[in-house]
Image (cartoon, rainbow, N blue to C red; front, side, top):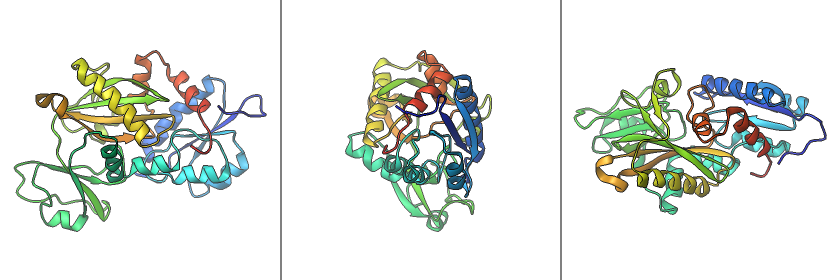
Amino acid sequence: MVRSSRTTPIVAVILGGPSAEHDVSLSSGRECATALRDEGYDVVELEAGRDLAVRLAELKPDIVFNALHGRWGEDGCVQGLLEWMQIPYTHSGVLSSALAMDKEATKSAYRAAGLPVVDSILAARDEVCRRHVMAPPYVVKPNNEGSSVGVYIVHEAANSPPQLSDDMPDVVMVERYAPGRELTTTVVGDRALTVTDIITDGWYDYSAKYEVGGSCHVVPADIPQGIFDLCMDYALRAHHALGCRGISRTDFRWDEARGADGLILLETNTQPGMTPTSLCPEQARETGLSFGALCRWIVEDASCQR
């Protein structure tokens, strides 16, 4: 709970930032800022640049609402700055943010908690471009980005390895392809909300996530109750295993042909999107929590030492 000597707390919504998800963060931040103003907060929007610390020191906000996505905003970096400045902030803390942003480290935490994942390795980008480092089908993606940025699918019939773009990192994750449906569950505090079935024409990539009409969301998911319950249980266990705070969203793939054995965790997002097409606000509405009430809850949950 945030306490302030001001009658109306000043909430600084930090958005934008230097990651590949800059534009998504702008959309998330603006939506949240509008909602918080409607909830009665004194809101200032700050685009995150190299002068962020200086601007925060000048503004002296009571709370920082972290609407950044991707590296620097979601990986523990800005969280460390806010801890140093002793400004209460939203979402997960330094360690859990760094852990969840590193996909291989996340999988280690999942395995330790008994949660199911697919096999993966870390490999040099140049090596991945030269040969199949894993038998197809497999997926290549950055180990520390989100929002389906830089994802390559190598199909079973592929004769040659993928030619990765120059902006891919030097070391990438190569992961066995998991067939099936895309499912996701949001956790708010200590409560899993519901399950969404994400339907697309192909891979749930960046455009499918953020363009209007890019995907169809069935919420609550029309799936067997046993699989629904497992998603809810796994999402909450993942949230705890990674030490998340505030809200998180865990993504799954489910191979119907294999039943419960076909459900695997892909990743946990500690800064879920808050855009008009985002899954977390949609799930909150489904369970009776308006967008404004969700944003208010996130602000009220803000603290240091997260």
